[in-house]
Image 1 (tube, rainbow, N blue to C red):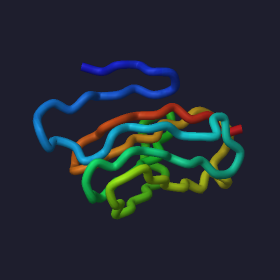
Image 2 (image 1 turned 60 degrees about the vertical axis):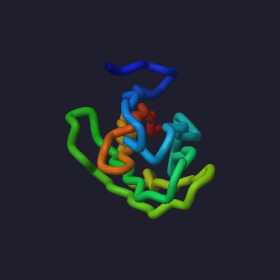
Image 3 (image 1 turned 60 degrees about the horizontal axis):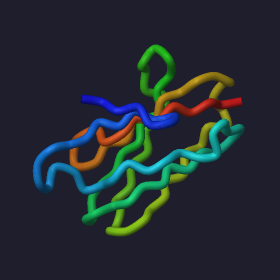
Image 4 (image 1 turned 120 degrees about the horizontal axis):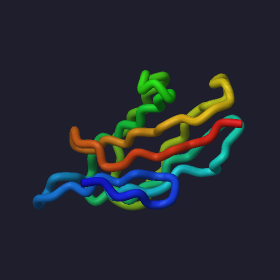
Length: 104
């Protein structure tokens, strides 16, 4: 099951302990050079954000070990051509959100 919320598609994860992060948002959107992923981390975990083009090809991958609390991950998009991109957010090995980001 997926839910569309604004510029993101959220896949709820069922079961206790399935995910250590709550999907947040990506801003600014649209962006020209750098986008920030903000999310709430429930327990320390590794978070991965993949930037994909419209064909689903991974163009950039960002990973960070995050402590519990509200966290940010900065993504450099300056060298990417203008267009629509997806940011797939993975925590604990499971996709927790997919955000649409416009690069101007």
